[in-house]
Figure 1 (cartoon, helix red, strand yellow):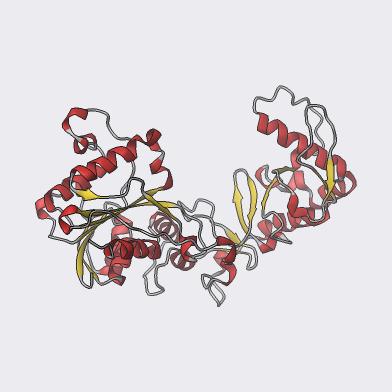
Figure 2 (cartoon, one colour; figure 1 turned 180 degrees about the vertical axis):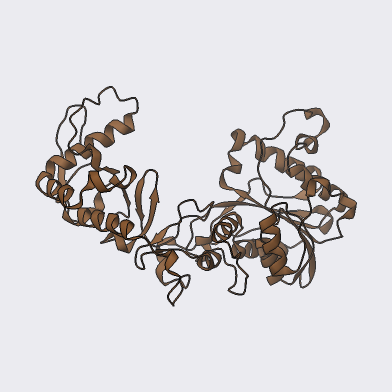
Length: 410
């Protein structure tokens, strides 16, 4: 389609809008209830999206060719099964999509949702959605499409469900969609063009204390010589260990507070926790001289919080130092991941730190990670900006899937 009209439901800050506009689309209606998202949408597109879709009559929505929606996923009612699949969606926001499609018979639909939509309620939720759309005359796949930006070479691991549909009146009887499969190991976030080339505001850089915590753990990673092997048996207390050719081979969370402990943990409720305790104690025994010196030097138990006393090394052998990775200060500890692809932008509760530059991702960089252009006006409140990009669809993912849909043959 060269020129077409679309509506943007649950529009957020306009990820769908951006993708459709890139393909020649004109937005004729948008709906959103979050005031800050409405503000950002209007600033960028000049459209007032302040419409509560639950209070909008379907006949008041302009005629359109494409319906776009990143709809929230709620539990679907089991009531009224004898009244058809559309009835089962009542009480959910998906029902708003159903009633609009029933009235308009929109030729094309593009819906987005979280990865676990397919398994929600043992697959029953997907069955309700699929059958409701089929009952309305839409041709859709038996299973939704699952795609992540990294499959398009974008350095973000963020699997999402995309539901494509075309009305049978178009003459199309079956969807033929090809998903990209770019190898994430060939992607490097650090040279992907996401990061600013110039200095950014000082507020995005880590604090001196955080830098101290990371330097401390980096010294630990570099200093240990032996680690417990996967064969370590905590039941028989058999001490099986291997010489660490490289420290990245650590495959369990490191808990500094367990190093010198001797309490009996045999009655611990969780097996995984018993395993971690055992391996941390063995780690201490194998590297006692170094670890004792390390604890004393860095005042681990005086200067660090309990969460800062934990390290989750998830780089394998891909990082030689902590500063080579992507870092998060999480409740479960300091997590270090390889810098190939970025963790999924979600609520951005723990905004990852880019080790090489010792700072967090800026809102503009978050925008790039979600494939928004640099011309996009970012919300001036950082908290809102992170939240908005975390909730947005990835523009290039939607654009790719839309192109697949629009190129279907009769």
